[in-house]
Length: 401
Ligand SMILES: Cc1cc2nc3c(=O)[nH]c(=O)nc-3n(C[C@H](O)[C@H](O)[C@H](O)COP(=O)(O)OP(=O)(O)OC[C@H]3O[C@@H](n4cnc5c(N)ncnc54)[C@H](O)[C@@H]3O)c2cc1C
Image (cartoon, rainbow, N blue to C red; front, side, top):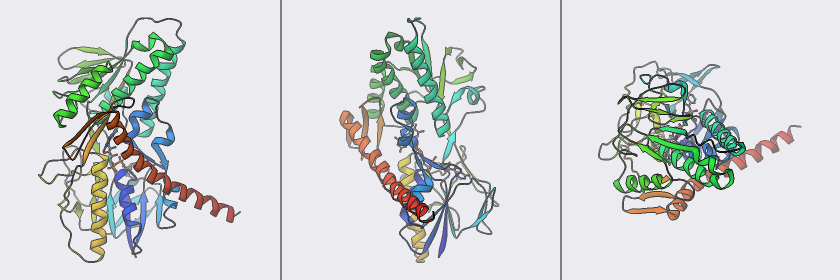
């Protein structure tokens, strides 16, 4: 029996486990520092108060139990990889492996050169950070509700970074504010959402169709878009731009960049400017060590670097799982050929913009339904496994009473 260890229970890590768990030749070890899988792709709805905690976080121990003793979950942070002796180390011990999959994701890059950003900006790549912003946003809406009368003073909620996550959060919050005007009253309109990016457009790198329709929707929702603007520094209530302009703000979210979560190793490994592992064409950084998802630089068939998405994390996980099974049969590996099927951007309420296979273009409620179908099918798959695991666990506990 070969031991396969997976570091990170995000989109990539879980997909790798799912694709390996049916094989009786391997025993699986899943490491995560957290007890839950965080559905980052749903963070926009959680922050704006549309989704609940159970929509964005699922218990990993129950999920692993759902594989009926095939998957061992170890809730510990991996601090060192010993590639010569084939083991990973945590604060509490050493664990051997035959194959290792690093799926440790990435975190928000609160650029050090922008002073005050880390201190005053909220990130969304960690559940506690999203939760912090959700609480702050809810408190603000509550204060608006109980205010006796409108003060007429605008309160700016600033989102730094107009990539996929920044755009989705801006749209969802603007939609909530628009809808709350009915129940909270006119003072809700004092909340003004700003979306800021250093690039020339929002969603840099995406197609014209997606950019134009997203821009139109954001404007309809009343989001103020500031592009071509570099943030120089931030203090407790003001964002200072390089062109010497300023923006007062009440809360700020930063989604303007990521940095990979790499793990110390006994060998030097090549990484790119945002810390992602540079793998060979079979996604290996060593003979039996693979890197997938946000922590790795993944390229398309044509050699372009792919944006870090859940979709790419899953595709790379499926490829690596298949590769490990091939290696067990002593078969040769084919290079990884990433394929992006499409992109859907949720834009507040029941509205989305999307493209499938680059020729199907959709917007509005239909696009929203398609996006929801994709995220729901992912969620339901996890939930079924979770329910099986939970039932197994509780029946075992009863037996032991
Ligand atoms: C608001 C928002 C919206 C998004 N929308 C979309 C979308 O619509 N479509 C899309 O495809 N993508 C979207 N993304 C991007 C997507 O969420 C990421 O690309 C995806 O989460 C990457 O998956 P991953 O498995 O590589 O890493 P992650 O999901 O980040 O998981 C990494 C895991 O590794 C664990 N970990 C890290 N270091 C260690 C360690 N040393 N030891 C143990 N555990 C460790 C972490 O706790 C975490 O659980 C969105 C992201 C955000 C923030």
